Image 1 (tube, rainbow, N blue to C red):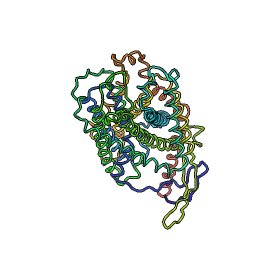
Image 2: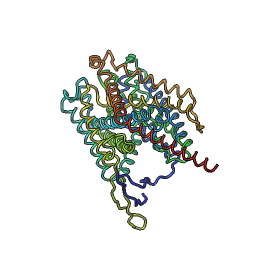
Image 3: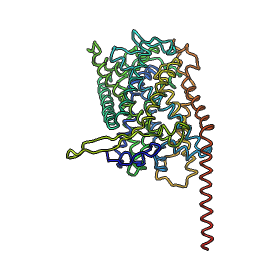
Image 4: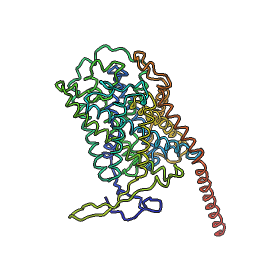
Length: 543
């Protein structure tokens, strides 16, 4: 890291904006970054949920393939956005350009939902999965299917302390651990995150190749009852949750050489790699599944541990499964760490735009710390490291609130609840952003070097609308005697959570943010008018 001498200004923002030396990056880096971001803990958890819901092996593979194709369409749409607007910022910039009136409303709503719902709920879902695998690692059984198991038909306050609240506390412990090492040393945090990313990718390869030997098992040909039509929405939401992250590179456009070309290649190649990896992993899981995994009442959210227990048939004490569960926990921590790191930067960026009246000056502060690093020839180099401490702490507190109160107040499996909330909320803005590209083409005079075919935009829009509509049809399998007793409003609780926060975000924009944006627009117009008048006067005098 290069030495940085400029200190913070009065607001705590470093005057030298280049806190980290940026090098121009190419396609290989983009592929690696995208693959690492997309492949998260979802692939270690959601296949068990989807297998239990859909039951038909080939239909399951088609759903995973369809989810990948839809994600690929979305990434191509974002590639055109990247060619038009080469600034970092992603949806915030794209929505501003596509929907300029009312001023900043669309971008404000997205930023509000991203900071308060989408990103923290993803973190909570990942940590919930990590806690479940930690439970298996210690006790050798799933917390959803053991002597002590969670009753998903009850709210958290009515569940037993063990395992329900133990899992919550373990998830919070992981959250504190990750936030802690990001607060202590950024370079150390980066090294830990990179190591955990490698662990995650190794796990994917091991699972894929371990399942090839089991492909000829009878699970692919055995007669199975058709799944309930109500099972598909939940399965699709969970699959799309596993593909989340395909738009990551649009937040790093200034780090790429020739971004319009590199972004397209990076997106296409990385998503194809992810699709192939996910299908191979699902083939492995389905091949190793037992008849009990297709029972409606059983939803296996530690399917990776179950897989290794069945692959290693002599693993009577589930020792091998416990070991691999430990690596899944590490992978989940790595995924959560990436989201926690980037989430704190999003909070700072929003605070710099004064999205949080009153507390914005505190949230956008960066704490500086002088660090010493040994360079070449044993020479000690001094540099300043900046950490968004207040943003990290605010995110920590909010995630704890979500884990303890929102997760425990709804009688639904915590991982499914959190993943459904994030996916449903995100897709509302994916639809708005993709349609915004059509509007941007009409309004912009800039000729984009890359144009995605309109049919892809329309197919992506139709897919998004179907996802939103199908979400209102609950996972209510008539053969599931537990799920069939849960009221309809509880089944769609993730929709209510998203809508409530959307209304809160709109209220914040209308009462707190709208006036200052109007004033800014008036000031900008006045300045422009004044500059035009001065120019006209000068031209007349010269004449």
